[in-house]
Image 1 (spheres, rainbow, N blue to C red):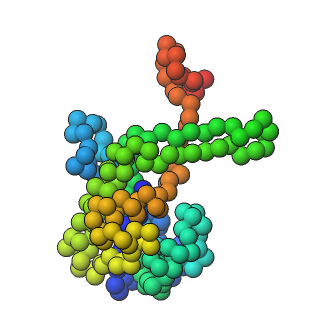
Image 2 (tube, rainbow, N blue to C red):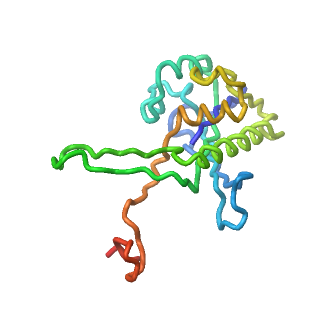
Length: 203
């Protein structure tokens, strides 16, 4: 899930953490790779009023594992400026991770491997979604606010043409996070489904 970071010039807001909500807009979009017969889109956008460069307590950096190198090169130049981000989330991932026991000790943390982008189609959809998000940021309403992209480049991707499919693919692979939507590893299904663990009433 690639974060597209943008900044707004002269964006006015009240001070304090409770003066704004954490999500200011949500959108659902079909990328060009979406199956048009599916019953819901393959990508979700979330508009957030801020970015790591506006995070003095480094909360976002800690939650997402953002390295000092990436922060210093990409975000530090924009410290003190108002910004927002359009987060691109994949709704129909084909990749499947694993959760395994580390040992027989119940206090040992499990071995979790999310295998993000194990299926190359997932990465391709995130790249297409990001391209749409960038188009949104260039739309007339955003331009009226003075929105511009962060022009600083991700260190491990700077050898690629900026904003090309290859560059967006590199950034997505380098810096992806979950959104903590709760899910389960046990399948729900009718009584006759041999692969189901619980029925529709969670029994």
